[in-house]
Image (cartoon, rainbow, N blue to C red; front, side):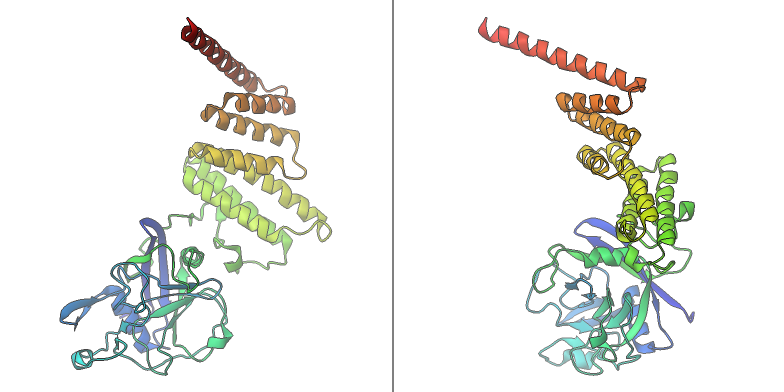
Length: 394
């Protein structure tokens, strides 16, 4: 068996696929916890519980506690792998591969079987550590675990740290930002739909973002999670946002519109995170604003191509509201809004925006044809309305 153990979770929210999380397990530091987690991912152990043979697996288990900027918790394979519903029992069960038949047969208040010793009681100095949940006592680990999404000094030296997320950090963040009730129980089912061993020949599917590194995009989906540059270095931050934007443009040229859209959204997140105030760094403030307008316009175009015409209008308006926007870019924004309104058959609004496009780019012959087309449609509709009214009173 390899010294480096890697396993994966595939995550869905309700019926929507989100993506894959890949963990590296700390085998030498926490052999009991890593072996347990590995086999629960593989699902190759069974136990007879309450008279029924039960596969010990994380597959189909759901996350039952989510606390933003803290952690996401799952692994109650006794109560949290069947019907998704909140109950008094959820979060109180668990079973490790070390559980014995005699132990399981004994009546207990809390069905946490196969408790094993604490290991590697380290410090939670960074997000994305993988750690065991206990019952509040030492050496009470079973199957429940949590993934850190922030730092937690109050947990230092209290929980077994046995791994870390190496791929799919954005999937963890998506789970972290799921809507929850006052107890942290998610409103929608966040489920582990598949799990198992992973190696570098296997894919890392992602459905709500793009992890394609085309164009040199090596950056994490969430700016806070990226460690490739100093966040105080505005030049490096701009370089990151620009590279991500160019990655989106390359995907656009390949007609991969959905992933191109994801890249532009990612670039926008980096811009919003790192743009300096004008009085701090005027030059970089101007560069970031110029890039932001381009990204808004690209998001507008992609939204239209993806048939999200309302989003096309929204992003065009964002561009128009941006300080420093030049006439050429105003023309693009009005043109795209015109196309969106035309698609919605809101012909008067389409004509207004096409005319505004013409004002900002008077030499564009394409817009002349658009204006003429919409004017003809409006006139035809007026004539049709007149005829219908005439028929009504005849």
